[in-house]
Amino acid sequence: MLDWLFRPQCAACGDPQAPLCIGCVGSLVELGPACPLCAQPTGEREVVCRRCATHPLPLDRIVTPWRFGGELASAIRRLKFTGATHVARTLAPLWAPIIAALVADSESAIVVPVPLHWKRRFKRGYDHTWLLAIHACAHAKVAPPRPLLRRVRGSPPQSTLRASERWANVRGAFELRRGTDVKDHTVILVDDVVTTGATLAAAAMPLRRAGAQTIVGVALARAD
Ligand SMILES: [Zn+2]
Ligand SMILES: [Zn+2]
View 1 (cartoon, rainbow, N blue to C red):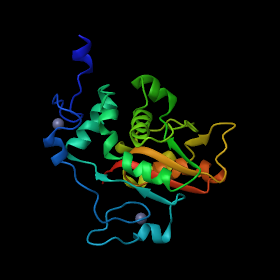
View 2: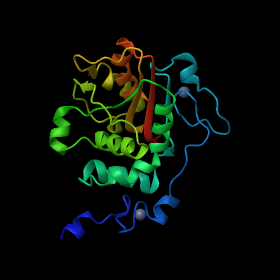
View 3: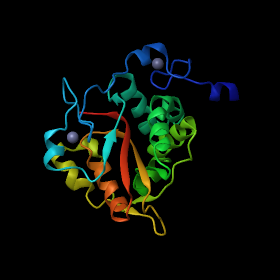
View 4: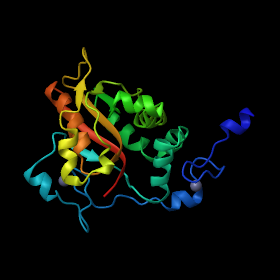
């Protein structure tokens, strides 16, 4: 029984091979040339996008290795919506190297996941981004993530909104937990999927106000 329960499965398709089956690895699409500040794909070459040139984000940059799509998208959906919490561990190798490199770059790096509102976490029974971050940090052999942010406003999921609505939806949605010291630290702000960068930007605001020196957003995948 226990063997059956804990048998590793491919995160995306449920194939009982581990960690990702060959078919699912084959469907991964690298981000490719993108804005070095917000990770928006820029076609042929890597250039700062128009938005970042005129309205820079309140974080230093966003890094993400993959495009949201194919079997990676179905794996993230299974993790979020079907209680398949083991997926968080299976996906860890896909982005742990980025987290390891960022932590190695700074003496004071802290990994901070973007939190769900407590009501949504309560309904789902877990915070999928927290699980993704825990396993990515473990795989990267760095200190575990720290729950320094609180989502103080429940808001509709960003994925249900148009790009233009996403900024207003999350503005002021995050606060730093009382007694948290991030002054002069590098904060690695972790989320599952990045689209416009609005959520990472909103989560970066209280960190910036509290004196974080560098804030780098890291997402597992970028959606359009
Ligand atoms: Zn698979
Ligand atoms: Zn940009």
